[in-house]
Amino acid sequence: MIEPRSAGFWIRAVAALIDFAVFALVHRSFRYIGASAWGPDVESTIAFKPMVALFTVVFAGAYTTLLHALGGQTIGKMIVGVRVVVGDGEPPPLGTALLRYLAYFASAGIVTLGFVMAGLRRDKRALHDLIAGTRVERLPRAAAPEPVEPPAVSAEQPTASGAA
Image 1 (tube, rainbow, N blue to C red):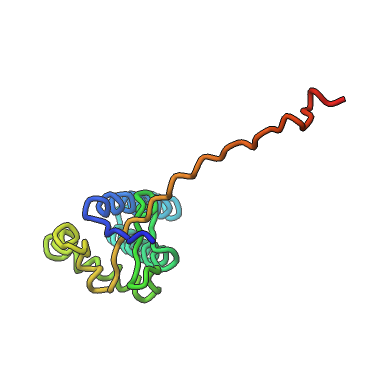
Image 2 (image 1 turned 90 degrees about the vertical axis):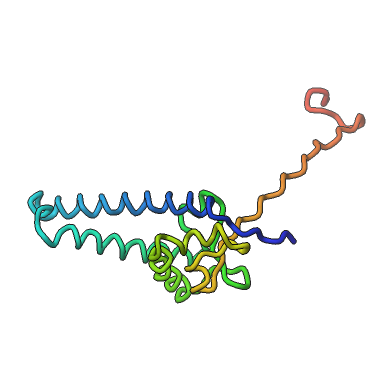
């Protein structure tokens, strides 16, 4: 069995950037839907921007929590080939995945030092991984399939063109 490799800082950063692009798309969609439903004047109200931001944070929480609990991967992690796991190599349970999401805010808190920890620690775990008891590992590469040789044709078997 191949030993799992920890995912380092840069591959995790690329996965996060992809997920942030998803969040930006959702944020824009919420703004568009709100402006379409209540008119363009709603964007100038004092409550509109915080409400859109709140919906985006709730979406981001549901997105990361549910996808990590279901399969250990968000869209960004799927694309770069990493996954979040707990001690036994399984995706984290729902409560652990939610704790990990909430711990992102602790990682981002002190000049993003919690995220930088993934690049400095030998085990490549960030602060939110330590808080939730998770780790991010690279998916094993699939072994190249062995070439299949065509079956040998016997001289005694009639071929389609030589059948009488």
